[in-house]
Length: 510
Image 1 (cartoon, rainbow, N blue to C red):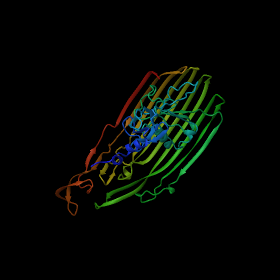
Image 2: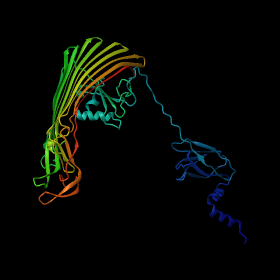
Image 3: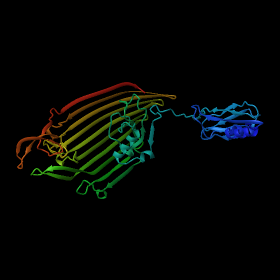
Image 4: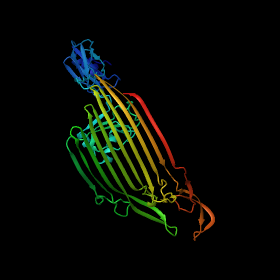
């Protein structure tokens, strides 16, 4: 059967429409098609493709079609955001279709940083991770000493630990945190691996606090804050109102002793914190029956914080600073709550005192000599409410005396630092000697009162009159207490220990 030429063209139009129309509509030009990809071969949708005056955009699959361009066009280019422009030559006869794929390379990124001239010398202890708080930034922190301490520890935390190493006025030995009003600056994470620091902070940051001398005019403040328990909701496990409350009061005073020669600063603070512990246990009555035991026990805290500082201008190039700080924290009814009865609690007192002397001598504009001496004495005491043997019935109650009993720990620290810092141009050298001696006397009569526990085991079977029948059974700690026989868990001896530690490091260069 003969097929006419027009029928062939019609069939081809249905089978290959783009090519046919390109041939029909662009007999004197070129038809272009292809895809635009990135260096990995992935399609780039929305790329701009230009051939002469004709501009099109790639579809969602990265393909483009240009039906017709003059055959005088010799180049095609493609560009997209984040990629470099790609250009290619076009080769083809008039009326033909050209398939051309283009691959776009990633665009180069260039950043210009302007570094202005600065005549000030760099800080040898400052690095990119450091941040210094001064003035208003310090005042925005919490007034409460505990909250203030937590905030600066969080700022210095590395994520692995929330306890930062705090250095006050260059002294390595930890001490009482100074009042916020006496702080001149707080540097978070200086060069933490500088050799002047005793121990690298493997898991915690460093906080370096610098205090300020007294003012040349008298300045003082009196403060009082109160949070009464009447505004608190009652604990859901307590059968009575929970007496939580907090009062903080004190004063600050600073001023001159001798005009332009000596000044002082003093601060004293008292905090009365009323907290509570809720006991929710199960006891046995006189007939051996289980009886719920609920009681709300007060756990008061009394905290004293004081500091006194004096500065003397001995000579035009010689300044001395003498400071004393004290902290005493008393806690009552500790360890009580939950299954622990009030008789198993204890009271504690932790006190710390620091006496520090600093002598600073700027010998010349490029040479600074500084000597620091610190003597610290600390004491931790615990007094048990009862000296009876500790008794624990798992899942029911803990009674008897606290296992810690009358613990007593005394520590004496002596630190001596002598540093020299030399500055020449933009370079700074720092060398010094550090010496730290620690003497500890530890009296720890842990479990000296004896400790008994019932956590399950073989127990006699009793009759109706609570007399043994001669048979035994196994009882867990969550079944019925006592008829299983109590067993001794621990009974220790030799509670006293003393040790002396001394560390000295010479010629540490920073």
